[in-house]
Image (tube, rainbow, N blue to C red; front, side):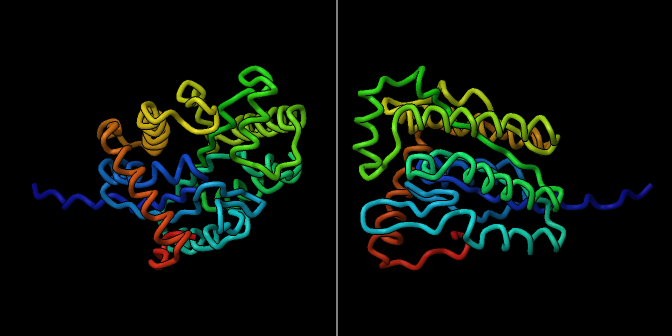
Length: 257
């Protein structure tokens, strides 16, 4: 009996949205996902200091808010052509320190979740991986705010309250829809500043995120992301940051929004 040839795996579009943690891990994460799935495409809205509903960036440049850029419109076009879509929303935190209210951030995140649900996408979320009142003292919060958000008007208590409300929203959203997945346990990978993942643990953090995504998509992960891969990825991120975002001597790739 003649068997029919095996059909190729359907293409999966990954929509990756985040800030500095995702930017550092981008090369390693996409390589890991591509090793596990034969046909992948990536479009991205990421960068250090990037916000979901506020402009944010670093030094002499800022990014369009993720909620206002064209990444979801582009993903919609892919979905209309039959591609399977997986969306990652991570590094949710800069907006609060820029003074955006938790209600406004929740509204923005809700819209970014609901749109791809209309394409039957799988949505992956990471919550704030720190509890401000538990993990930080007020003088530590003030120091971090001076380092990373020197113009921020947000107080310790305001940030703590906003983080708890947004995390509660993300938890509820994941409980209400089986295609919304909250990736938990990220707090164990925090670095000294509690904002970024530890240099020596970030490969484990992103292995955890990637493998949660792959398992949900019905794919066996190829392997974990290695520390060497993450270090190379960080170098690629720095190169992209300086050459493309800061100095603008290299044109931004079409998959970056």
